Structure formats: C-alpha cells, structure tokens
Length: 373
Image (tube, rainbow, N blue to C red; front, side, top):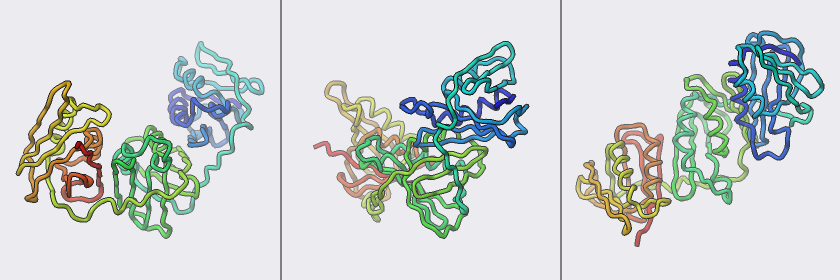
C-alpha cells in the first residue's frame, strides 16, 4: 500500500473514525484503524464491536495512489503523528509486511502495524428503504432526550433512547425511571414497516461529535440487531439494545388540576440560584409554591441558610400547589426547550410534574416529585 494525501484531509477523516476506538479494549486489533486503499479511494474503519465507523476518501481527494492494499495502524499513534507532522502532504507506504513508513517534509516515522486479516469483518449493509431525516432534527432529538437516560448498567435498556417509528412519525423516549423526556418528529417518509428499537445513548453521543451543523439529510438503515447511519462520506453503525422498552405512554396524564406558564430563562435562573443552598448536592431538592400569579422557589439548608425566589407567572387554574423536586432534573428538562415560555402542569404534590411548550406537544418532559416529609 502506498499513497500521498493532504494532511488536513487525512486528519479530518481519521478524527471521525477514531470515535469508535475504545481505550479499554483487550483485543489489540480493535485499538487500531484499518486502512483499505482501493482504486476508487481510501476506506478508513474503526470498531470496538459496539460501534463501527467507516469513512471514505474519494480518489479525487488523494494526491497519488501508488499501490493498493490494506493495513491496520495503532489508532492513538497514527492520529497524533498525522496531527503533528510538518508540511501539507503526507506519504504512507507499507515497506515491510507489517511496517509503515510515514513521511512529510523533514520528518519520517517507521510505525509497526497489525495484520489487517485480524480486523473483524465489518458488514456495513444498507436497506432498500432507509428512513431519511435532517441532521439538525436528529441532533435535536439526541440533545433533547439523552440527558434523561440512565447511567446504571443494572437496567441496560434504560441506558438507551427508544425510537418508535411509524408511518411519518418518529417518537423518541428516554427515562431513568425518575424522569422522562419524549420528543416527537414528523418526517417525509411513509413507511410500510413499524420499528421499535433502543439505541445506546453513549453511541448516539459519539455520533453527535461527527455530525456537522448543516441541514443535509441522514439515512437510517434499521436491522434486527443494529442501525446504520449514512451521511456525507461516513457510515456509522451501532448495535441495538436487546429487550422490550417499558411502555411509558400511560405515565403522562390526560388532564391536570393546575397549569402555569412561566418565562423559560427566568425560571431556569431562579431554580439555578435556589439550588446553590440546597442541602444535598446530588439531589439538590428545592420547593415550588404557587400563590395566585406568583411562583415561590425556595431551598433550605440548616448548615448554610435559606433562599427564596419570586417569579411572576400566568396561572390558568384557581388551585395552588406546593411541591418539591430535584433542581438538577428540572434544569436539565428546561434546557431541552427553545421557546420563550414553558408550561408546567401538576395534579398533586405526589404526582409527576409535566413540562411542555405553550402551543406544541412535540416535546414533553416529566419529573417525579420528591417527598420531603
């Protein structure tokens, strides 16, 4: 294998695929990046058996293809070497069976390589009818739900985001059993098949890191045990979590006895300030009270002191409420909204708190209250 390629082009693609390299992997070949040089261009692949990322550099973006072939190079070394090499053009050449010569201007490296036959077979198949959505929409889905997933491996399904896809609707849900985030999106697909899959949140966050900020489309190819995301020159494949995701549809009530509308940023700020004196930093419990069109937010710590914040709101029901909750969970939920105002819905001090936008139902947040007596 031998090629000449511009440093920035190679570095960009290496950085993308390196997201699939695990530092904890005990299989040496999985700490590497596979180079497959063909007549049509260069394929770069990395995998940790949980996610697999493949990036393709077209031959028109390669200065010279001297000899085709394959090799696996240690991921963290090749990335740092390419990043720090001088000059604009880099030469890579396999000079012995498992040795690679890397040259740029006055600098050269001889790097030990790994047999490409040891690299796991990567089946990056595509379906005939992919689900097509905009990158920006997918990023919003992940941003507005990922925070509510569980970090406890004892309930693995809750560490993922549940995608329910039917006709022209994608409904995404995340919960850790103390809070819930649900995002609904309309797409321009009208599918014959329905899908109900759970994608590990960690994998989706890695996908986020290589999604550019543009409105280009991304394709979702769904299989029994994996999902493939296709965009730009990249294929990103993730395993799916096995099992049936809990039915969360009955957790959100149809009617509420108390409804208030509050300015989003001001509500976030008063909760943020009140949490400064919260007694338990992990739960960071604060109390919310309504009195006519005034919202009282308070927290009390015997060792530190007490804080009380007031905020003018619009209360659309006569009833008042006193309820306690985690300020961290509430602030996470508020950050998911992009509107000027937010609606908070209550039934009692022991029933879930629901948050939504004033005139839309496409994003719903649920937080369980905390009893303080």
